[in-house]
Length: 355
Image (cartoon, helix red, strand yellow):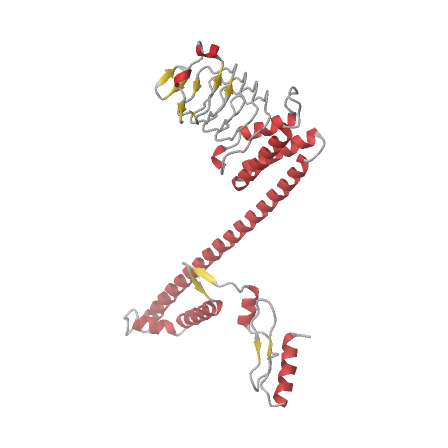
């Protein structure tokens, strides 16, 4: 039974008993149904205004001002009536009171009235064109937002499928998931940070599963390679590779800016020409790693083990160590050089130690 019918019957019974009619309520956006004494719910057909508000209830916004539909429709009707009047007998009135022309008769009056009607039609055409432009822009904005929502929905579906692929027991499926995530990070800047977090977690967890002497897993290498060629401008924080076992990883020329390698195993890793700006290498093991021409500007080198590492032409501008020794093979002092803001200096003079 409809809510208005329940309210009508209840109200009628209350009036018969001498009590005020009850109020009917219902949840949702509709207003409370209130029945005043002597009134009954109307069963007439909905008005034109109600039909318009039903199909397009949102007020029109022009210049930041909200215009309800009833005002706009009333204004349109007034303009239409005014136009019809000007195109008819009103042309002579406009000619006399607005243009200040009087005393015309015959063909002269008809020509002047036609000119007034022409101006009115030109103004009306311009107004219609403005309205058309407004609604075209409105529809274009709606279409753009709809497209964005659809695109984001597609990205979500792709992301969900890629995550499922990462959990597969088949290598080729996992690789497909890794590269699918890379494509998502490139296509959607808003999802970049999330994708990098997922890939970093994958590297951290699965890199520790191998034996110390075993080569790096293919899927782990693929994931860290994707991280290494990301667009770091979309990062929202350091990439967390703390404790990852990346011994023997191929990271030549990699962009590892800001990555957190705390306690990471980078033994024998190929890091030549790598961009390691502002990385955190606290207690990282870089034994026998190749760092030829690597850029370690601003890196935290606290407790790093560089034993046997190749450090030729390494850039250590503003690199620092927080009070812990840095282990370096003494033989490296003979050949390798580093570059800082003053030029080429000896390796031992390149670190700033904060005791």
